[in-house]
Every structure is written in C-alpha cells, then in structure tokens.
Image (cartoon, rainbow over all chains, first blue to last red; front, side, top):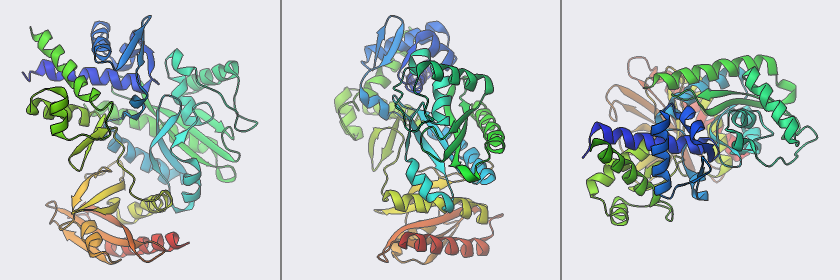
Length: 243
Length: 204
C-alpha cells in the first residue's frame, strides 16, 4: 500500500495545496502548475483531489481555497524555515535592523520569523506579526508575484504615502518585478522604512519575502537593499539545494 | 492500477487534513476514529502533513499550522528574542529561548547562522533532566547549567535563567555547539551576561 508512487502523490497534493495557500488562496490551474513545477495534467488531478476533499472550489478554471481555517495552514515546511532563518540571522547581523521572513496569508502578510536585537525590541513590538500587503515592502513583493486575482486586496490608507489606487499599485508592483526588490517609504507607519526581495522555492515560484525594516534616520535603503537582495538570492539557492 | 492506488493516497492524506476543519487539536486515536483509516496509515499520513509544515505535533496532539504556541507574554517574548543575536555572535553556537513545559524545555525561539551544523527548531521539546536549559528551568533559579554531551553525543550546552520583574524565573537563554569547537568557559560567561541583561530589560 505504501508504494513510492503513493508517497509521491500524497506529497504532490500537499505541494499544490501549499502553493494555493501561498498564492493567497486563489489561482488558476496553469498558475499552480507554474508555481509547483508539476505537469499540467498532474496539477489538474491534484486540484481535483482538493475539490473532492472539500478543501478547494473550482470555478471557471480558477481554484479557490475553501474555508477561513485554511489561513492557518503553514506555508513553509519546518526544514525550509530552519534554512531560511540562518540567512535571516546573517542579514540582521550585517544590517543591524529588524530582518523578517514573511509569507502570504489571504488578506495580509504574516511574519513567520523575525530577527531583531535589543535596540529594536520596541520597533519589533510595534510591527507585530501581520503586515499590510499593499503598504509594506515585503507585502508588495508577495503581491507582485501573486497570480492576478491575488493582487485584488483592499487598499486602506495608513499615511499620506500609502498607495491607495489600483492603477498606482499596479505600476508599483510592475516596478517591483523589474527591480527584483521592493521599497517601503513610510507607507504603513510614519518614520518606518523597509526593503524586501523575493525568496523562491524549489520550483522557482516565490514562496516568501525577506525584508529589513527600520526607522528613518538610521536607514540606508541603498546599502540595505543590496544586502536584502543578496540574502534573498542565497535563501532561494538554499531552498533549491535541499532536495 | 498503480495510479489508482497513488490517487487513493492523495485522497487519504486530505481526509486526515480535513478532520482538522472543526477541531482545534486531535490525538492519533481521534483521527483514526474520524477517518476510519487504519492507525498505521493515519500515522504515516500525519508524517507527510508534519513534514510539509501543514500540521504540527505537540503534547501528543496534532493541530493545524506550523506555529508553535506562544507561552510568553508578547513583551517578554520580544525582549528575550532581542537577546539572541548578541548571544549568537558571542558564543558562535546556536541559541535558544526556552520555557518549562512539564518534564521538557519547550524551545520558544531560536537563532543560528547559515553555516550551523546543529539546528533546534521552535516547538522542539528538550528533555529537562539532561539539557542545560531544562536543568535551569527545573531548578527555577537564575543560575547557570551545563550539559557536556549528556543530551546528544558531542553537543555541549550552556543555559542561564532569566527572571521577570517579580523575581520569578520566566525562561532560559541557552547556547549549544559542537564539543570540539565550542568554547565552554567563554560561553558560560556570555550566556550569564546576556541573561542578566535580559532580566534587567524585563524589569524596566
């Protein structure tokens, strides 16, 4: 009963489920195929299993996660987190700001790991575990790499600098994609700056964002940006090398 | 034939996952009852779910999500986590914040560099009697404890207690490293120093 085939299928259906969760809970089968690196026919079959199990709905070629409880799913495997936290630790050490590893949840971005030193305890508390997608560097990286439907999030204004128009956000996300990096300039909290870059999983699809956040006076976005970009690239290589 | 069997395993692993829909935590026996699958099958499928990070096991119970529970108050948590980079840089080992959980030291947070040989994930439960953090937590006093290969062969550990504002022990800060390369005396001094800093910070 436990054949290599059945083990592989059980692992694959979970891979598709995690990709769907990482996309914000709404993706086309073609997008899921790209995110997981699985052949189209396999992706369709796995999506079929998710529907039969009542975990996902299929509607016009789109696959949606059913049930709010699925926002509680872990997107990164434990072994992946331990690899990534090493990169995050190095990033915090060189930048001396707060370094975070962030994944997509349905309506916001969730901090799964954070490294900060004693000087940044207050700021770490102020940031919390949930970041708005459209108003933080990490959130914008995740939005930029989300399937089209996943970009449709509410755009509340937090500061005068928050991007609240869909057109302006689309332009910003396109520039995030071409630059390979996202900047945050007091768009969420006044005085708060950030830089983020994408972390790709085994299949090459973006599974998380790595970001550094800090208060204005001491935040050198150019220098930090170079470090974040290098750390995220290294992190992606670590994930690709694990299997 | 093979494809059918294989597809059956996808359906079964999702059936186990789906049983978490309406419950917070489940024992293996609960899941066997709810799915009607053999115990060994459920156990094997849970292995898939845990490795994928979709389900976490704690205290013999399974629940959704990889996030371990947060036993410390948010401020205490941030203060103790904020001490980890300094401890990591000073000892060169892997470093942890733990709290007592029955006969175990529950690792609440951890930090290690990219080149770390030894990693201890948050949510890990270390036996209290033979690990440095466990001994500090069992003693319930802000002293220092050392473990020389008693928990894992060739792993050395050092821990010191951190007290809250009322003087009660709230957590242990610890560092672990490979016996050959870990500078034990230096680590003892550093863990003690950083634990004192954390105690001062918590009293503010």
